[in-house]
Image (tube, rainbow, N blue to C red; front, side, top):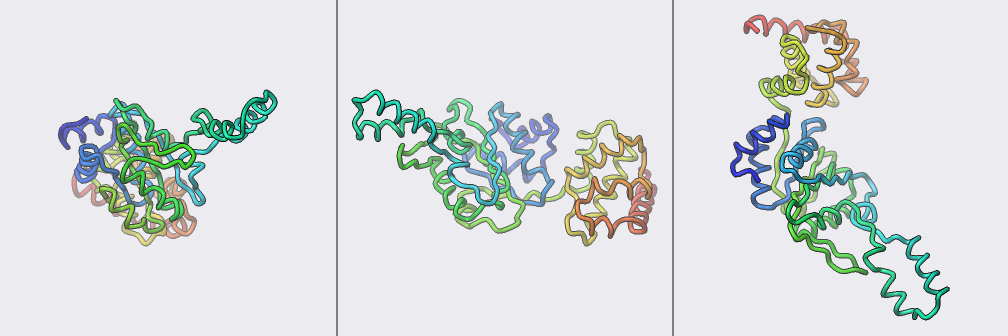
Length: 302
């Protein structure tokens, strides 16, 4: 367990995750206070990645629950192994001697319980409790959010046929949301909160150097400058850090050492994911932005 925010930030950096001071502080407090951490922000800003890196850094298993519309208790928490239960009933009936009461009591024994991610997290090793990632909570339905309240408050879940399962040592819970809809206040009250924003140019350049070390320095600077300028445009979906890294690696594969309008136009699909956005930047606008970026870097002596 890191003793200071600086130590946590350094350990994340050693795993190639360059967290902002604010994010490192939020993660540190979540660890020290044993509170869930809700991370909101645009897609591609590193919300999911920090849970993975944090688990690796702490030497703990990562348990991930990917949320989606229609997610229910059977997929997220537990369900009973109905085929095996039916086989057991048929075998008991064939053998004879088992009363209806005995069958009813035995049929919900622990051996028939199928553990899904949330229950797995609660039953994790007390010496090294897992990191539980509840990813893209905004994609789930509100009834599932309501179900989470018991877990987030008391680190327990209730199974009517089995009883209450309480964590011996609470897992580190990280929830993420791309804010396609608002998360309910009752969930937010149970969590620490941090908005994960796009990085500034200096931190994004440091990330590119870590994640795409084969890129020429001039290319890396031009890419970061171009993407920082793109985020000031009126686009439906702005490129995140994930797209920055993907684009840099793609241009390295194309043996580029600097940006040019033709290469940008040919590879915009790596960077932008909507045709309207690509059409808006393609051609004249891309040439203007790259010329401006290169002029600014030249003026700065970079």
